[in-house]
Structures are given as C-alpha cells and as structure tokens.
Image 1: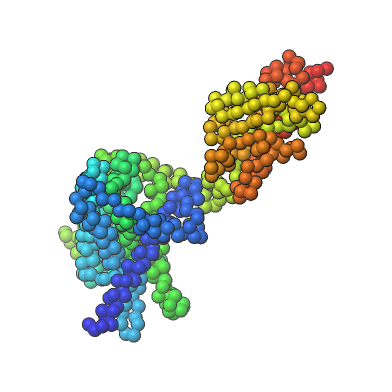
Image 2: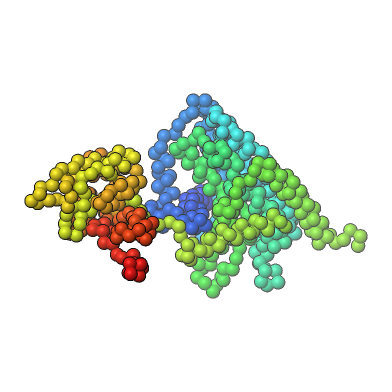
Length: 358
Length: 209
C-alpha cells in the first residue's frame, strides 16, 4: 500500500460523499416539485431555473439563523444528536457500489466508498444507530413533544428493524446460491445479480424474492420516518416531533439526514433487489467512457424509481395511527418475513441438496 | 387483498393527478402578478365617484353613504351649488369626500345607500400603500375624470392594471327605472362606472304596450 493507494481510497470516499450530497440537495427540491405535481401545484419556481436552487437558498437561510438553546435542554446530548443523525446516514451510502469499477494505470478504482466484507451488517448496524439521534434529540430537548416523538421513534425503529433484517436474510441466502459460498459484501451481491435468466429476464433478486422486496421497502419507509410512518415528526400531533426545539443549522442537519436516508435506503434496496448498477453497457459498441458511465446511470435510474415511489406514497397516504403502525409491524410484516424466510429456506435447501428422502 | 387494493386505488388517484399536472391539463396555481384571475362581476374593489354623461357629478353630498357605513370610514361634507355654474344637478354637491381604505370593509352598503348611484365599486383591489396618508382616498382620487376614466392612486406601479377600474360593482335596483309597478323586484344592475347606462329591460317594449 503506497501513497497512490491511500489517495485512491480518499478519492473513492470523497466521490461517494459529494455524489450523495449533490443528489440530496436535488432530492429535497425534487420532492417538493413532485409532490406539487401530485397536488396540481407548481412547487418552487423562483430560485434558479424551475426553482432548482431552492434547497441552496433554504440551506443558506438556515445556516444564518440562530440556533436556540432551550433552558431545560441537556446541552451535551442536545448538541450531539444532529451529528448522530447525519453521520450514520452518510456511512450507509459509503458502502453502496454506485458504478462499475474501472481501471486507471493498472489500478482498479471501485465506485464505492468502501467495500467491507461485512457490508450488509455494517449497513444494518448504522441504520439502527439513526434511531439514537431521534431518541436522544427528543429526550435532551427537555420538552414534552420532542420526548413523545423520541419515544415513538424508538418503538417504531425496533419494530421495523426486525422485518427489514429478516427481509435482508433471504437476499443473503439466495445470493449464496448464485455464486461460490455466501457473502455479505455488497459489491459481490451486485455482481451475482448481473446477467440474465433465459436470455432476457435480468437476474435481479426482486424476481425470486418479490415478497421480501415488498417487506423490505415498507420497512425502509418506516425506518426513514417518512409518511405514512412519520409519527416521529407528526406535525399535527407533536408540533415537529423530536426536532421541535431545534433551529438553524442543527435543524438543517436533521432535515439533511432524512433526505440522505431516503436516498441511501433506496440505493440499498436497489443494490439488494434491483441488481445495483448492473445493466446493459454494450461494451465495444459504444465508446469506453460511455460504457463506463452507463452502470452509474442504471444505478441512479433504479434508485430514483424507488425514491419516486417514496414521494408517491407520501403524496397519497395519510399517517398511520400509532396502534396501526404497531399492528402492521408486528402482526403482518414480521410474521410475513419469517414465513417467507422459512419458505425460501426450504426451496433453496431443495435446490441445493435435493429432496431429503431421495 | 382488501388493504392492498385500497392502497393501489389511492395511488392511482394521486398518479392520475400527477399525469394531469404534467400534461398541463390541470393546474390550481395562478402565477399571480403575471396572470390574473377573472374576478366575479360584482367584485367589491375600491370605490369610484361617478359623473353624468354631461360631466356633472352625481354626488349630492347627502351623506347617506357615511350614515350607512358600518366601519365609519366615509367622511362627506356637502356644500350648496353655485347656481351659475353647478357642480351637480342637485341643490348641493359633496365638496369633501374621503374614504379611509384602512377601515373600509368593502361591504358595499355605501353603494346601496346612495340615492344617485354616485358611488360604486370597481374591480381594483391592489391598494396597499407604504404609508397611512396614501390610504385616505380623497375626492381627487375617487372622482372620475370628465372623460369617464378613473384616477389610479399609483398609475406607475408595475402591478397597476387600469382595466380593473373599467368594470364596476354597480348596484342592484329594487325597482325598474321607469317606475312601473310591473317591474318591481326585477333586478338590473350597472356593469361599468360612470353614467348609468340603463338598457331597456329584456321585454320592456312588450310589457309597456
């Protein structure tokens, strides 16, 4: 490992970080625009062409606003919570391969922040970390509405984390049958989804594992605290939920974390179920640079389809009642995920080892 | 399947609205200063004091509008006409006429109270000012010019739309101008500021015959 290798690592991380940051700024604008379209409105129009600079304007405004310190706040934790929200959100995306590796001067550069051999576990661990931000922000504000939001956040995250993890297990099991041994590396899971079945059906995990995908998607909507699962914020009931007492830059960080989470979770779903960056690249027929960029384009298209569904659901469904949220999580998704896990275990076992009686 | 079906039905409804917006078939937002909505004909905007076709003022300084005003925002003082050179066809004319637009509630009771149709309301509603003095509309701003145009407080304002002053609320007559009892309750109203140009009632010829 020499200096250039270190540089490559730095460049990989910075590239993933910058990509995520730019796309998040665009996502905030895109959501406002798309939801406006759903409601026959115009959405942001004034800042830049089609209002595309609206997020920048809002961010600058928040940057210059005063960050208020509530008298009863537990200051240390109160100041830390926004960072606890942002950091896990970014770390999740650093694990996700967002393009095909390419070679410069004999060195392979993967378009992925870092390729851990326990990538999936890392993602799970840090998506659970995000709930600490909600709980600690709610508690440390020293105010009743944030506290209620934080308490709701804990229960919700624990409930939906379980079904999300169970849905992921079937992906790991299935992709173990697609190559040599099991793997938790996200780049390897993507690689095993390239190619096609019968010449035209892409070998994406969503086709054999559709039920797991549905469970996973519902769970990530709940994990990111998006409508219809936004009980943590619930403007009509809890003022602003856990971030009621936050203002200025600290609020902006919670806001940023929410949108980073939407994108990284959609990217994760793309990686696990929709084949990540795999797709036709027509190597040789097209110039090398275009063939090199195409996988990133496929990745972004797939991810944005999921992000669009996030927006669509938000524009359609009213918020769940608390007991409905719990009932959906514990009585539908977790048993459903378990049942699906058992079924897929049996099917994979038969295909791997043959019928036990033969 | 019931819940999923309902969910898909909901997604379909919002999806159709998205398609409608994107294809430009439905849009609720009006880009306000750029495009203005058509106001209802009897919109209550700022007032105007009318004249007869010969240029005489209609206001006779009777102060009935001031009496009817629930917000007490109208101040009128009448004065005797100069017999040689009368300002209004009546005995007196309103030589002070002020409306405090900060107090006015645009109810239109002054219009109904006026016996000579002197005061009517226009479609102009962009009357915000940068100081209180400008919100006191005096006779100079309210009284229409002899050529029938209505003075605008801020004609240079980019928002100023002089066309809004051309159509007036007018007012509903309880009885026909002819005074025939047969027309009692037949409502007519004047659509523009200025001299009341009452067209004959739809079937007036037949009914008079």
